[in-house]
Image (cartoon, rainbow, N blue to C red; front, side):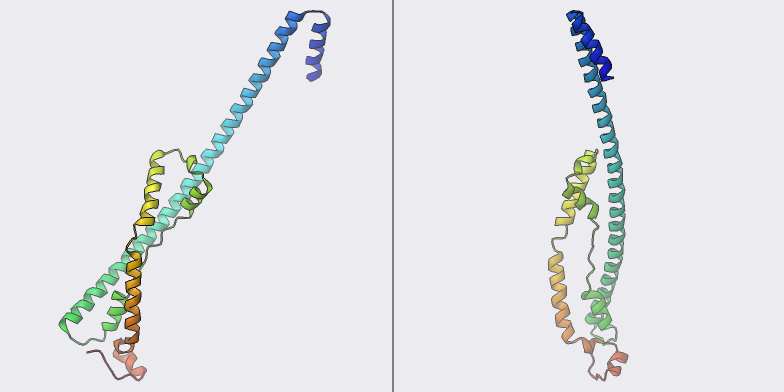
Length: 196
């Protein structure tokens, strides 16, 4: 192909047809520019297709993370509801000042229990860390992801206080935990003292 064009150029120059040669040269430049533009268009199309495929994969992974987080939140709420129930029972026993073999169970399963929500953030963290947030086309989704991130970071402000408080209660209760055991366990371990 190159030899063909070279022969045409040489023939025009030897025949002193400069105007035809100039027209031919402009035509060749136009063809090269059109070829470059077509190549760029194909390249852009391929890049857009790859980006859309990557966006779909990211969205699927985000959905799985959110479903796992939702499942974890639901389980944590259920466990925390049990904690509240045990605390209510413990409060009733303590207010009535009646001895009960269940006080230890209510104390350890209630007041000294704490269940933490563990969000699944792997995809979001990877998305931010890789700098590929721009792949997502939806500005609304980007805003929601930023809101979600801030809620995760700052939404558990009192969690450290709760954990520290539960830990200190557990340390205090562990010193006296034997007397809080149900009677059958106390007898098995040879303990006589009960909670009154």
